[in-house]
Length: 268
Image 1: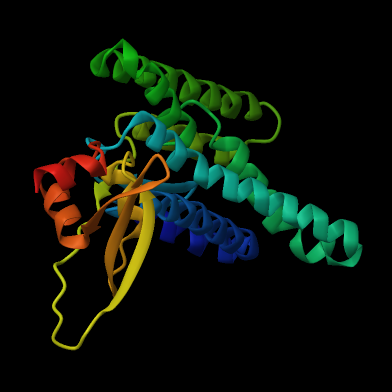
Image 2: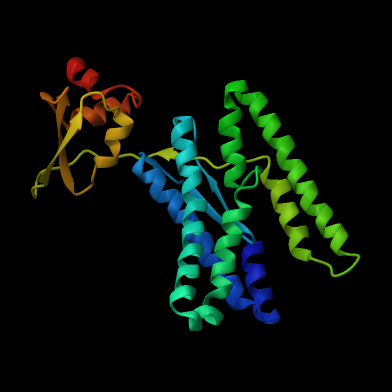
């Protein structure tokens, strides 16, 4: 937790906004858990999540992730918040009397969904923009993303300045600072690692039928710590070969994430 997050919590207790702050914190945790679950499904892990006054920042290593996988992970967080907001709307439709007790949570979920669509780091919209600009070259994409992020931060700061002529909005000020600081970072992920299993107490075997053209990265989603995995590989609807867990892990340790499983059978 960032010190400013804790400070915001203390201030919310004195201003009567503690319930809203807790709802925002829970929505942010839901958001990051959705990222973590999506990353885990692809064989990645989130190294470090820092809760900020207006969201969270993720860090790690993105060097192994493909553009398609990164967009999938980016979309998971906002999608979870959007579905939560829709869930509350459905609840109000069925039970209108619940509105006064859930409006804050719904507002926060909807806000996180919309805010994260902004094309600025460290928001998910900024990550997605970087992925889309990556064909231009990594360095050029980073410079363009930072320029857009700074422009968005400047726009939010301008809204704060305008609010000073009527009713000052300190939230806009803090959010602009958050965006300005975050535009020099970016979310990252690191690969999951799996220890070699010992069979002293016995391990239940799990068999998965999979195409021989599936990649090692795609196969990682089936690995479990408490089960020994064996792949039955098929090619064109016919049995091709058997691939035990050790052979997949050996290939992964060599960094062969994008290669097809049939290559491991032929190599090892």
